Image (cartoon, rainbow, N blue to C red; front, top):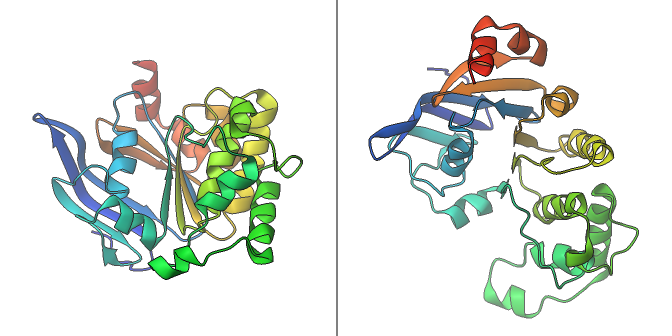
Length: 248
């Protein structure tokens, strides 16, 4: 048990079983404020399941998940989003027939009540915030371009932007550079190093070169448990990690 209460996110002894198979097995994971953590591991290690548990998509069978010291185990997905946790899935889900501007604008958190939503209008402040995020995600050049006409990499950035505009304190990205060109990967690394300034980010990734370019700390999962944790060099040098990866 780790008694430091300053963690942004703490998973303690978390397990989840599907038909008797423990996909996540007594997992302990602690994420600091302003940290970029990459979770790696062979297929079936439980990586995506961990994100599903944090965002409330899958229920924890046992254990505790705390966000800013608040127990969120058992919370619904929407409640968790409102607390400040954003999640991007493997396949980009953007509005193909809306422009870049409209995609971002739609994702802006509205007033929390109905009247706030009704009287909400496209003010200068909104346009400014949208432009700011469009710049961060390298899409400021053509705000009127339709989502469907963007390249695969640009769609991934737009979706990250749709989460960023909600200003989450914890952003979780599942394989953000899958299918990207080399130059898009480099820009994505640049983007992640930029957004980490005000928040924590958890990334699941297979591309080791990309991991090296972004990770503060790396957690290696194997059979639903933490196999190793540390900086990229120590993790790569770890004989157990080598064994797991070479064994696959």
